Amino acid sequence: MSRPQQVARPIVRSLRQAAGSTAPCRSRPIALRPFSSTPSRHDETTTTTTTTTTTTPSAPVEPASDPAPLPQKQLASSSSTIKQGSEEELSKLLGPGLGSRRRRAALATTGNVPFEQMPYQCFQEARKLLARDRDEKVAQIVAQTAKIKRIEATDASAFRGGQVFKQRQLDSLRRHVERLKILADTNDPMVKRRFEDGQGDMNKPIYRYLAHRKWCAMERKIIFQRVQQFNIVPDLLPKFEPSMEVKMTFHGYRTAHGTILNSRITEEPPTLHMQVFDKGDRLFSIVVMDSDVPDAESDLFKKRLHFMATNIPWNPVRTTLNLGRLVNDPAADAAEPGTLAVPWLPAFAQKGAPYHRLSIFVLQHKDNAPLDPAKLTELYDAKGREGFSLKSFRDKFPVIPVGFTLFRTEWDENTADVMARHGLDGADIEFKHRRVHSLKPHRKARGWEAKRQKPKFRHLWKYTKRIKGLEY
Image (cartoon, rainbow, N blue to C red):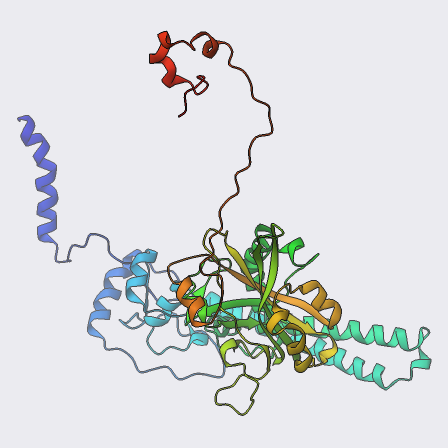
């Protein structure tokens, strides 16, 4: 047998086998895993496939009170299979939505089967175990709540430490009850599903706990990195640790922390997306300041106030605040609750100056005491914008910084037009670096340069800069 025949023989054999098969050929098929509580056997593959092609999809399963698993010998239909494959293949089957791609792929290909009745034996047994654990936690919550009521009804003189010991014990028991509420639902798949879909009630401690854990996983680290990277501490505050999530959007577009934005985009105030992780109502003040205003006379950088609003009510359920809708007239259409003290000043920077840091601080009022907007306007509006100090503001008013984000701005092609529209001076100013001459005394030529000062070595002068009488 010749060499070409030896090479072609396995190829011809594979082509014959492919021609005799009735299954279509695909380059990379997506695996289909049927709903079953037990692993399928190899000898049952053919029977299951044949039956699947001849049966019709069953009627939707009604939700049952007992989440018991479905029969184990249920046949897989076209609507009761979960598609598996790579992330790229799954993304082609799904539209934009919340939750992981695997979970959305399962929900998109399981027909009308409710999520809590997914026919997986391990899943259902785990739900039963979680239900028993939740009943134990609920019983503990009931017992601890009854203990709290009993201690509240007891006179403080019955305790050895008096009222101080009584209050300390009550606080400890209340924290323990809140912890039990979180432990009762922290592993519930329905709770996790609602949280991933953005349908969680933030008045409940479990959803606040999940939101705080998600924020601490990445966003909190990014904020801490920006605070250190841009020297927010100690330039603006001696120490600062954000305790709430703050994001911003301009004209509906999400802006990352510290992004350099065009001056035309920042001409209008942004929308803040804020999330607190503890229960109760509170009052906020919003401060936007520029910490890199150049002062040519003193050769230093000063600060400028760009926006201030106060007495903004907030709670865990509320998440969005449009700074452009904060007005002094509460009867205006679509007005945000709160009081505007200093209106928005567009971010701008002169040509040649380094980028400016525009910091947005969220300040919480101590004991929810409201501030006087008229006094804030008198102190910080008009000429009071220049030289604004956040440290001095904290000393004058009882506020605590709890949230932070920032963006940067620099001179661009739209800065001059923005400054002209808002009557801002300084568009014709250009900053240049001042030349600093060396303080070292002049050094005479020596070595190779000193020996080749004569015109005889003119062809070597291009390799030196210390030829007497010659300027480059």
